[in-house]
Length: 170
Image (cartoon, rainbow, N blue to C red; front, top):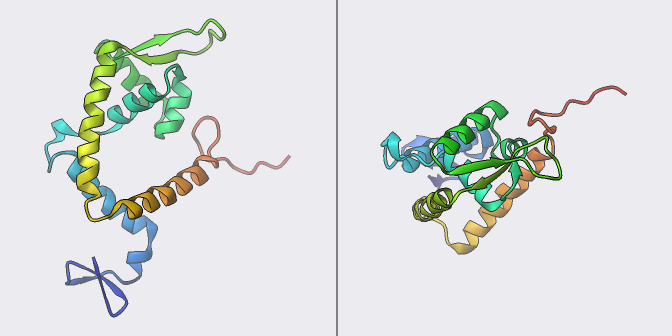
């Protein structure tokens, strides 16, 4: 995208105008490009998707509950339950009932899960470098600072079950 006379232009031929400043439009287009890059140019079998995010969050937060995991990756609890169950069958994740609170499952990576997570981190790093190639280090830091602020803002508006909070009269 370039700027021509103050109007955003894509590939020097498509005028985007106000759409170049519309978050919904820009994130939709960017998401399509990221999705394509994350599937090695269309190879769906190599996609880094929800399972990579779930494995990473468990690896970074040993003992996390499924509810907190669902909140962190912004997926429905049922979707997280299926992903965790599949990962458990594959030998990547174990569920344990903590002695302090037997009402929930604490999730942890197995040795195989940790190895898989290490491999995913290397893949994710390589893809991240490719995706962010147009940006220098300071620009990358600023991008993630701003994205982080938006994520925190919208995460704070979600209820414990991951749904938007509504103002209820008291």
